[in-house]
Length: 233
Image (cartoon, rainbow, N blue to C red):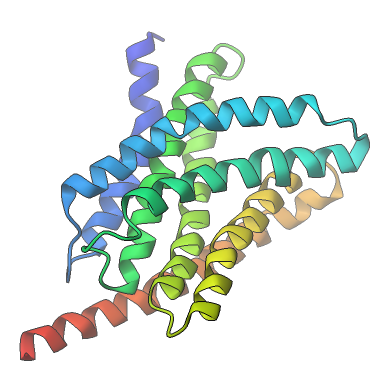
């Protein structure tokens, strides 16, 4: 299969999910220019992520299950979630358009899907010969997983943004990084452990979908109410 077709296969999941989230935000839609910047810089965030991940992998002197935990929670979870979140903090957190809680989820998701898209391109183009179905696997599992981690991140980032005091703000800022790391690390850990823990994979994925769709729905309803209130004014 030619490279162009492989790239198309790799980018479709991320773009489709980003478009779906964009259409979901129908009451106070975010500036398209800002969303494109978040997506593009989310892709570019893969560069420092790869550098840091390579360094952290080289200093992994642990063995067995501890080595897997280091790789999944620190090398992948911490590094990837940190840089995806950094994009949002630099480009959107203080932007005037960030005026309701749903916005945090939208911004984090666009950054994450940009990152997931470039990651998917690298995996699909480099791994197609070894596994022709790699694009399908990642389109079903990995790319949506990045979106779910981002919904959690955006949920807490919005709580921080609209916190009534500085102490609450700091707490939610910490959670906006720590909880996605926990989800990301657990997701990868179950897959990499490749043992009896695999029986937990589907329940864990279902759990993430249920929890994050509830978060998205709660902010969606709040956005709807916020929009109606502005119409009345």
